[in-house]
Length: 328
Image 1 (spheres, one colour):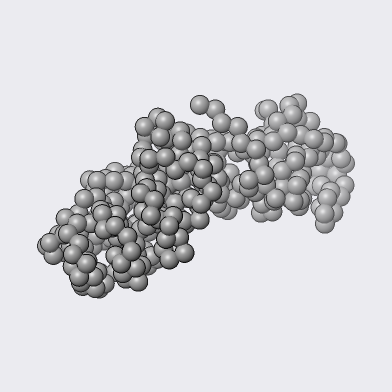
Image 2 (tube, one colour):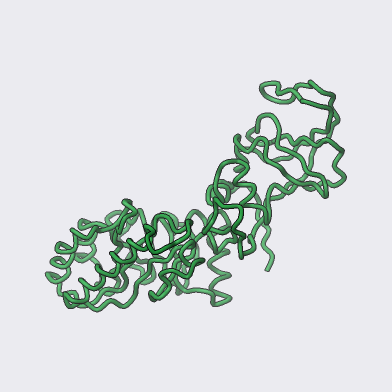
């Protein structure tokens, strides 16, 4: 999954790297609009999972390597009337209650496919709603998986050949659940943070976060207790050092990050006062010796927990204004 600009990491760079290293040849985005500005789509298949918008992007979809994931009868009918039938991908809602055909839609789906002389389906898929929890025999994921198998069997018994299928998102992949399908769909885990056990500090991540957010100190001053700092005149509880970095909510360092811990060499500070659009304050009890501030790196899950958010949101909040340095 490379939606939301590859979770904030730059979609073109991530896709190019994956292609170069032969890591995968199929990439998922949420909206067709995420592909409009990509200069080179190369030979990989790009799957549009949510906002397919077939009518307004007819010509773009005509390109061989862009595949809409169909989740309702109206889109399926339009697709069958206007596109090659060898790219049919159907999404089924097995309990997420988001997008997808439900089981009661099967008769209508089958009727439409047969009416258009369709003999095979490229791919069928579903999405687990709670695979970040431990998957046990009585869990929701198991119920969803069983329903997905029934749907596939109904399609097969109706005479359709199914070439591919998938259901495992990051949390399920981490638990080796549903991985017998032809495909898996890694999302967050591609970028390092765990998905399974994301709210459980006792479950360690097996992956390394591929990115870090760093900035430089542009101002450093010592202040006495009760000094008033920034917008709103937030008072210092005790003497200490206030450093300013050129990152703010215009860059994706959000107001509710106040109080979160950050690092400068061996010193730990806290984001302080109000985050500005272009700047934020960080409080250190002792004078920091370095000039680089690390907002997060391998501690991304811990940082997300501190600010009562999730890694998905922290990563995708980073704006295009933040320069990116890639190391291979």
